[in-house]
Structures are given as C-alpha cells and as structure tokens.
Length: 184
Ligand SMILES: Cc1cc2nc3c(=O)[nH]c(=O)nc-3n(C[C@H](O)[C@H](O)[C@H](O)COP(=O)(O)OP(=O)(O)OC[C@H]3O[C@@H](n4cnc5c(N)ncnc54)[C@H](O)[C@@H]3O)c2cc1C
Image (cartoon, rainbow, N blue to C red; front, side):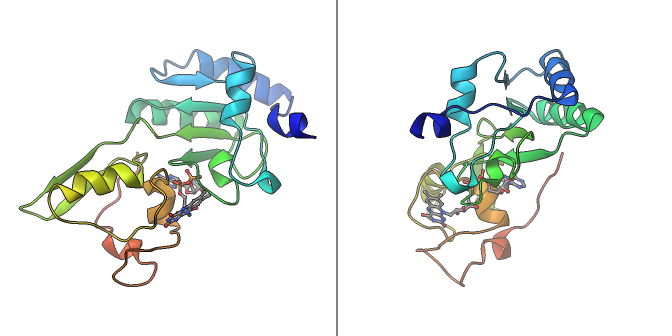
C-alpha cells in the first residue's frame, strides 16, 4: 500500500511517449525529469501533500529561465499535454502536480528572485519564490505582506489562490497587493 503510493508512473500513451522524447531535445537548459530518465527522482518529485489527490505527471521541467518555460509550454501544446505551473508545491488538491495524470509540471522554484525598490515601494518576486525567503528579503526593508507560517509555500499558489493568513491586513487579500503579473 505504502509502496504503491510512493512509486509513480505516468500514463503510457503514444502521445505521452512522443512528448517526453521531444521535450528531452527541446533545448531546455533547466532540468527535464521523466520516469524514463530517472524513475526514483520522478517518483519522489510526484509526492504531494495530499495522498487523496495523488497524480503522476507526464514530466517535470525545472525551468532555469523564462525561455525554458516557453519551450516547455510550446512542446506540450504540440501534443495536447496539459500544463500546470508549480511554485512551492503546497496545493492541497495536488494541482501543483497537474491536478490529473499525464500533465507537464513546470517547476518554477529556480525562478525565485526577490527585490524591493524603496522608491516605488514595489517588490518584484519570481513565480517560484518561497514565502520564507520573500519575508526575509522584504524584512531588510521593514516591509511585509500577508502570509501564514509555512516558509516553503510558494508565492505562485499563495498569490493566485491564497492560503491561511496569520499576518494580515485584510482577510485573504494577497491579490490586493499584486501590482502586475508577467506571464511569459
Ligand atoms: C503543508 C501545507 C502548509 C501550508 N501552510 C500555509 C501557511 O502557513 N500559510 C498559508 O498562507 N498557506 C498555507 N498553505 C496553503 C497554501 O498557501 C496554498 O495551498 C497555496 O496555494 C500553495 O501555493 P504553492 O505555490 O506552494 O503550491 P503549488 O502546488 O505550487 O501551486 C498551487 C496552485 O497554484 C498554481 N500556480 C503555482 N504557481 C503559479 C504561477 N506562477 N502562476 C500561475 N499559477 C501558479 C499551481 O498550478 C496550482 O494550481 C499550506 C499548504 C500546505 C499543503
């Protein structure tokens, strides 16, 4: 029972196999992780926070640049593979693993830059930055934003969907603090 929930396998279809092969030669400079190239790392990466919402992605791309995200999405589109972003991977519904079997997970955790401009009072935060790191960086400027207690939660899910907020100004209003979002 335990072993079957640890070892994941992607759905075996012709499209998935062709997609995975194409993804591996698509020029992505970050990491392309598939069941074929590293089954153990693939299974570990597929473990989510909620065993009731366990999914086996077609592949993971850990993007090291915006161009990587673009290449991954374009390759998935060619084969009709659904794409899901993953920031901190703390989705209770397993959406950071695709929310269904056979998706491409684009892991943004390496796109984690955090900067703050005191002149404009704007923070620029990469889509994969973790709340703990963001808080530490912003604290250097004596500013903060609503968040809870778990430092590994990502800004991606937190800002778009939200979570439980221990430090707050208005309830569940991270979106109220968003000034601009760049989608690439
Ligand atoms: C163990 C645990 C502890 C938690 N603790 C706290 C807490 O202390 N405080 C708190 O406020 N909340 C907490 N939460 C709730 C958490 O804030 C939400 O589940 C949040 O949505 C997780 O975001 P994530 O980026 O880490 O998750 P992910 O699984 O990476 O993403 C969640 C969803 O957002 C989407 N997404 C991610 N990045 C992007 C992006 N860049 N652009 C568009 N969509 C994106 C994903 O596709 C997915 O649908 C906790 C959750 C768990 C499981």
